Amino acid sequence: MKKKIDLSRFGVIMAWIVLIIVFAICNPAFLKMSNIFTILRQAAVVGVCSVGMTFVILTGGMDLSVGSVIGVSCVAGAQLLSKGMPIPLVIIIILIIGLLAGLFNGFFINELGIAPIIMTLGTMTTLRGVAYLLCGGFAVYGIPEKFKYIGQGYLGVIPFPVIIMALCFAAGWFILNRLGFGREVYGIGGNIEASRLSGVNVKKTLYKVYGLAGILYALAGLILMARVNSGQPSSGEGYEMDVITGVVLGGVSINGGEGSILGVVVGVLLMSTLQNGMVLMNISEFWQKVVKGIVLILAVSLDRIVQKSKAKASEKA
Image (cartoon, rainbow, N blue to C red; front, side, top):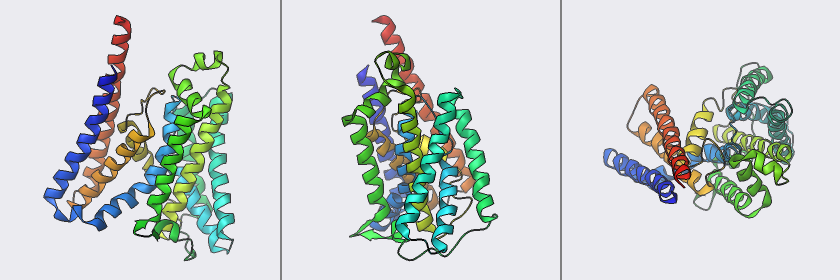
């Protein structure tokens, strides 16, 4: 059975390579170094969010509030910066806002037993409204030049947002593979009752998972705000689709308990490559949405096929 799972992951890598070849043939500019950095820069926001989403989905949950947390972070951060508040303090405040949004989700999921997808759908709608209320529906400008470095700067030849994304991926891998918290996350997604019986404080772990996810969404919001040089209340709209697709495409089971950060890296890069290639080929934005939707359906279908194959193998054993 392990071979089948490995083959599915290998298939995603092959699909990514095929995409690169096709887009390179259709538009030679696709392989230019400047465009490669553009792909990586575009992947940064989704990539940072995907680390938090990975933890959530590994527990068997789902978080649809990612885009709205980004929106609130962009608007609130831009307002604070435009009023002259010190950059470090603004960053801390926005990350705390993200943490509180995550804990808000965690509270109702833990204490009232609301299904994660329903709870985070409510949070998504609520926070999107908050984003518009904060700014009256108008974009917020006046961001200091120094702050723009987070989204537009370079460290050597590498875009700074890409470095932030890489550090988040590295931290996520370390937590999941080297810390007890990571084992608890996998355990809850694999069998929540077995985790409870083994002494895992499931509620505490879920609070940590959703809190961590909220922090990462807020960080992504800061990167996006610095990149577009403004706080837009619509920032992050639709990002939940790209984030979830990248995570599931990267091999994280929608049922929880299975997947890896390394696979998510490939999934996120594939989605960024797909979007960039479609733009270079002048494909309509409407068709881009169709393609992304189909990719998500295929990713979830592949996950279901793998899970059913595992279940049949277990029954035979």
